[in-house]
Image (cartoon, rainbow, N blue to C red; front, side, top):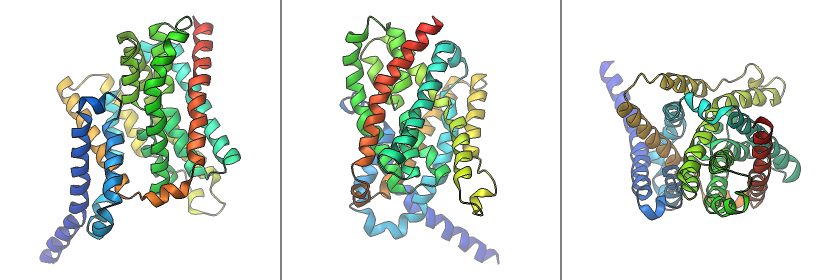
Length: 349
């Protein structure tokens, strides 16, 4: 019996190892590319590069070896992703709320709620998309880009192709925003100070890396305010996922397994717990930095695994409607987000 147990253990290990090794290798390439100044300068994060590299391998080499790698790749997409979202809390502290003030908090809440509500309406009523695609694109646009899309996927149980379409919208329009926001600033500087424009940037742009790139292009004050506003917005990921889980349950057909109870995204709860723990600064900064680096690696491995299981044919099948929807949301974030920022600053000033 002991020999059989050892043999089963070895079989299980080898079932996961090839896929994890392949995902890790792609992650290493993405991290290396992300350290190249020309690549980092355009705001391409390790997550974005990991999924792009994963898609290249997934549409060339992977179809020939997927039987050997499937177990590890699925493990990375599911379990390593959840662990990465939990560790994301080490990037945040609740003292950041005080730094942006009540106005910054209110701006983030209004921007998130209005953008996601618009996504739900546009996706299903205007562009005829399914709920999952609408929710994924809405999450990516309204909260924190690719990380939000990945965190939303297990709650709505979306297919890999839908997740990749949503991530693609973050890549396309978030990258455009890096160049658009610095171009906008000279024309709106009579209404925005460098700090308030930073809050506007952090409350409306998709990815953290993109926010850093855009804010840095304007001024240090803008960059600092943008990052704080953005990280505060990231904190809203956990309550958003709990709300969405309840929404998914309420929309499930009567008598289905989903109606029995709400599936609580525990990784989102643990994400908030970690952020609270990090707020007390119990750990040395060197340890926190190490955990943040580990978190980046885990999320990149999950992205690489997602790219491996995404085929170009599935993206073509999705058509232009998801991109058009994301474009409308992008315009709303720029125009409507500016209106929200100016209104709140005027009311609270």
